[in-house]
Length: 402
Image 1 (cartoon, rainbow, N blue to C red):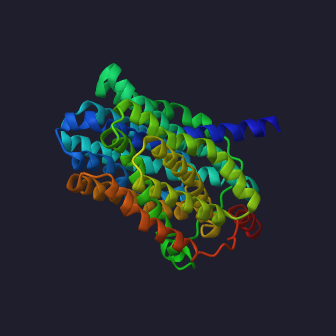
Image 2: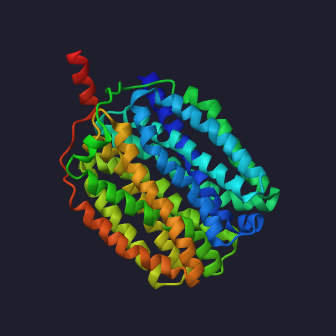
Image 3: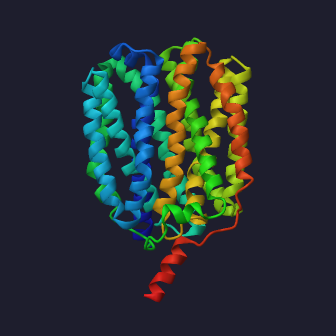
């Protein structure tokens, strides 16, 4: 029993750190808009493209990576991802050529897909349905940990050791995960069912298109806030850049602290959909506060609401996708939902950078996100909450028939 618990804890710790690496790579530069504009001598739109390159490549890689994660050992994909992230991180840290930096961010995004989707597939397949929400909620604290730590620490590191040194520290984290992942994921608790679904068969399932729409608009709004909140606090409300990064990290600290509770709650109420509905309403409230006020304390309240919303709509959505639609192909289901969501997040950076340059007002971003949040809530009402076949049950049935 102690060995089993130890193996379970090691799996959760390793998955949590892998998610932390992915989110640190993705969001860490949001706190470095000023230094990056100086390095590349660009406008907000140019730096926004650097930020959007990661989710764009990440989104395009989701479906093929999810397909492979159902058919290959996901741990091999994870190691390729961490090794590639190390190389891409070093290149991005050392170059001052915009095209090379943009290319490094694209490669990093592909590597992020090879980390996130296989890690989620591995985790979902390692726990029974009754404990899956709580387990993935614990692992998902790594999302908030990686984002919050990078947003808070990287601006401080820039002050101490410069932009290049700070970005090399981020690449060092990827190298560390390349070394420790084979040991952290050495134990597997549950056998995964053999993959049977295809993208077409998933799209034919009732409600799956609505879930894809919910994912698209949810990621679009969430990453608008995560991308532009640090700049809003510093350029819009006059907070110093280092303090703005620390305050913006509150979103991810809240998400990190609430994820285990949300995961446990989703197991107790036995309705992932209800958790998603509450989270969507919290997100809508956050944008309403940002759009109608210009006070730092209220911006922080909005950040807490956004962090809570993220914990209620990200990991629960992936678990819901695998349980409701992805029996036998959890990797593909998670990959498709995440691919559509990441497409939304990449478009968010591309759309709002030029909008901010044109209007000069962060309010234009927040007001734009409110009707999108309303559509998102409506889409959830169109998804049935009937439980799909449990992946563990599918595996047992396959063993009996074979």
